[in-house]
Image (tube, rainbow, N blue to C red; front, side, top):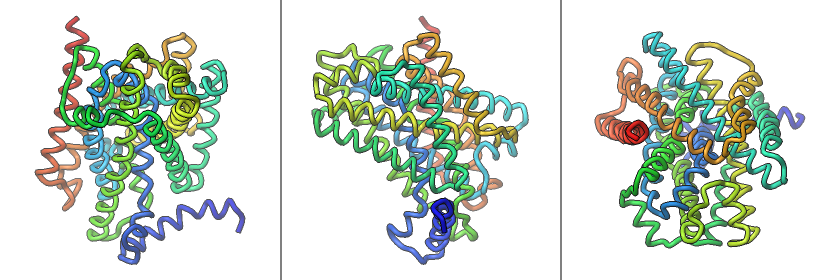
Length: 428
């Protein structure tokens, strides 16, 4: 059997191992491993270049103050990613497909258009982030870095033709690189742990700038496209055949979400802590990713600066792949309109090319894109909340009152932050 055939069978072997686990033949960690993948792929959306931009600005300008926003956003993300996965497991359909089946046609079209805007904002952040990494590390113009990003992303997307497992393993490798890089950063520049823990649990805001950043952090952390994608990824991996197997699969999925998004949350908090430790005293004006790199270089040395930019590059490339996958799901499941992957990639890269060609500040574009995502976020959140409560959709798997209360509270928090931002914008 040749190498290509072996790699092509990775997905089949994973599915078989998952079937064995659901029937009780694999226990403990061996039972969990076949189900590890969807939440890890979704988690890269929570460590994308938009997070780098908002977290660096948050730490540089406000120190540790906004850590509680990062923690809160991560908890909200865990809840909605778990609910999205549950929806896909129980129904065998993605969130976008169920919206098309259960909501009025005009509403579905409006949701699709808004979600396409979110997909473009996502691709803007991810592509520019990777382009910054390439341009700084290899001393290339930003536009050249952007074109190289598109080429590498396209190459990685071709692994989808080999089933679900290869792309999951590739994204997992990128997650490992990002996590290791920030472990190095914390070792080189350890934060003030007392302030770290205090501001992680004590809510504070300080002026209009902190509100904008808080909304941007939520938009960068709870990603609309990740909510859509997670449900879709659960429909074609390991099929549960009985209610007992579905409950077991939901438990495995919830555990994976907890582990994967806890790691993503720790990485985000480490980003803020690093910026607070290094930049807040003496370099509070550091608000751009390139400036952060050039400031880190003399302050902490080449290892810290290199780890930072390597993690950004890994983040941008992997999240570009995930963003394109999500964009494909949004288009084909909302309106049933299928187009080749290369066309989808070409369409979503247009905003990034325009921004770079016009000379718009890259980091500012990243932060604005995250605010756009936060404003769009209530669409999939509300849709998921409505569908996950319907017995006709979920049968005996509809969420209970406790989970409904948490989902309601999370949605209110996001809507509240968005309302504050809009009042701030239009009140001036």
